[in-house]
Length: 216
Image 1 (cartoon, rainbow, N blue to C red):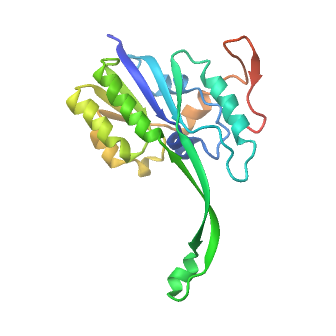
Image 2: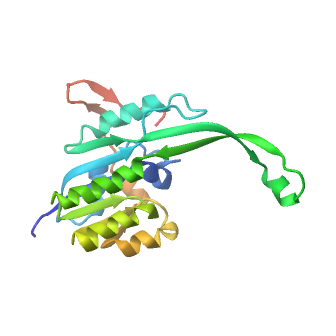
């Protein structure tokens, strides 16, 4: 079997909220996950992991520490690169659903809005740019974000590359636009998460040992 040089592009936000959030499988080894899902012919040379910066979420001050620990784990994977966007939080006032439905004066409540900026754009640019440079024969996208369908289509139809999509969301929520744009689609299942975790204790490139966050 002729090996296929493959680059993997991970939409970390989409992966987390589609498959990982609410599970005990957050200590996820992306390389092992991909090897479990993809055909063995795929020779994974590079994984680009697009995520937000290490900022605390409202109500979860320990989040940055856990995220940094996970980044250390990811960087033990050969050929994995972490590319950071920005995560914004702001306070705003929005009308309640009940007051809108009632059709009278609106009642407003204060809400905290969270939004990731830059990761999807960065991912699409990297995928197309790497394809133009001839870095890979096949690109694999881990995401269910239909906004990335344009980049997938360019790589497949203009650059004549194979483009696979690994969907982290439930099958019934799979983006049909991404499915049509890609060469093939695969599904992340619960067993893929369970069987492809890092070991609890790891050693970084400087020889320092560290462990999975206790909360995980």
